[in-house]
Amino acid sequence: MIFKPPLTVWYILIPVIFVYYFYRLNKYANGRKDFVRHYMKSRRQAIEAAADSVAGDGPPAIDTLMDHIRLPAEAMKTYRRFALVLAEHYADLLKAAGRDYEALVRSAYRTRGNYLIFLNRLGQMEKELDEALTPGLSAEHPAVSETIALIEKQSANLRRAEAERVFP
Image (tube, rainbow, N blue to C red):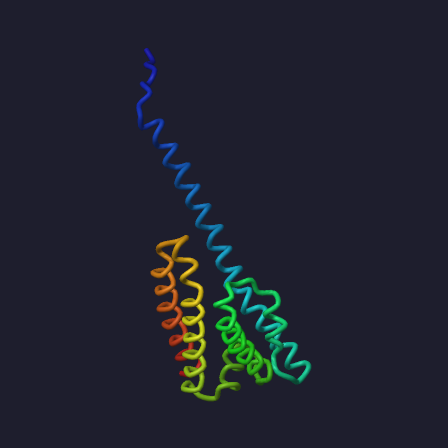
């Protein structure tokens, strides 16, 4: 004799749990891709401005870059300074001699101290930009301040480790 198994609540709940898990996993993956795309956008624009300045032998055209940025008005000045720091860094690297990133950094900055000064300046510009953007984001996403603080801390740790790796 074969008995028909009874339908229990677990048979209904387990698939829902898996569907919800995969929904959240997909949302996480898409959010991560969007974050990387947006995070890299300003860096990509800054390196393009730096490449144009090196080719034209002039300062980076940050004002042209600013025409394509959509940020709150109170953050635009801060973003401009941030983009200028990035563009100057990339221009220094493009003018340096070397076959890889580490060699370009060593050629451009010469010492770990000089490189750390740049990294600290970049970190400070990012922090100022985050502070300028946070008031508008805090209302929509309450955990944004904690997330930004974590990103800033991890960025500082990664940058210090990079400086130690490039300048042993």
